[in-house]
Image (cartoon, rainbow, N blue to C red; front, side):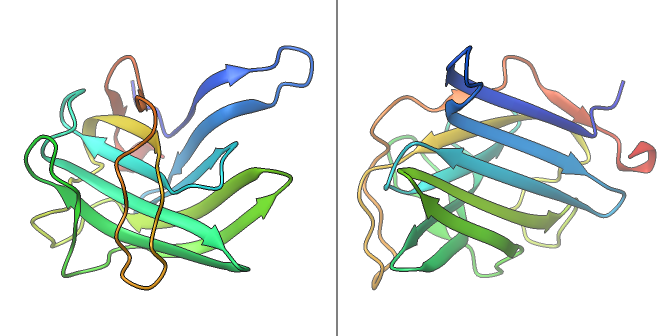
Amino acid sequence: MSLCNGKLTANCNILTQVCDRELSWKATKNEIKFVMSAKTDKWLAVGISKDQLMPFTDTYVGWTATGATYLSDRYIGKYRIAPTLDKDQNLFVVNGSYINGHSSIEFQRPIVTNDANDISIDGCRYFFLAVGGTFNSVTKEIDKHISRPIVTPQAICINPSTC
């Protein structure tokens, strides 16, 4: 069964249905759109992995500061090593905002790219949502995430031809 869209949440208020962290996705035949949001003024990141571990994960790290949104395509190689910028930035930022203490970034990327550091969405993958520490808007460097990332409990299997 293909899951063309879905949502991953953490710490949701039952009455207001507002969550401290939320990741949603919607796939089409050629691309996938992610929306990541959290109650934070730190960086946010989506990870795409073949397992539930951080090493060897394709990641998209971003933040909204001083009215501008920054997002980058990165790759996590070894454990406890900061993600490095990909040579090819296979993404398109659709929207970013910081309102009432909540950051939100919406972006799209191709299902399949020609970048060796990008993990294809065509197949079964785990999705992560991480909330970071500080970021440097000039150098684009980031500190380690401040809490354990949330991850889909099972692999999300996407068959783009059915989306």
